[in-house]
Length: 143
Image 1 (cartoon, rainbow, N blue to C red):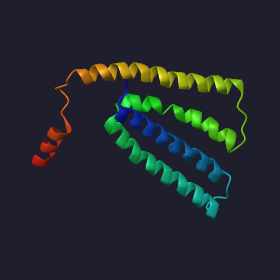
Image 2 (cartoon, one colour):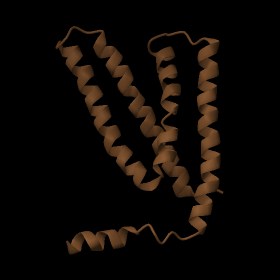
Image 3 (spheres, one colour):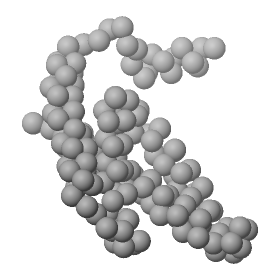
């Protein structure tokens, strides 16, 4: 069974990825404005802000989750892109896009299920080759 902390980490990861995908919205909105107009600067500023937020949040997530797990979950931004395109830009979603979205979602779910099995195996065995945070801090403080 998935621990509450791990579940919360995944929820936070997916909220963060949803926010990250919003940078694409702002980027598309900026592209429709005159260069250096107030609206262009506003939308481009939002892109920079959202990407900055994402960079900081991403660093926090990969402290908790393995990089491969976090990176595999980034594929959901394809789904968010389709959602934003449909609702905000009134883009059509054809059957090929739906099939692609389902394949991406299925891939993330399959990866998460296999990764969960590997994570549980790794948690049950102690890895003495990987230093814990306390020993890393001690070494850094001694320098």
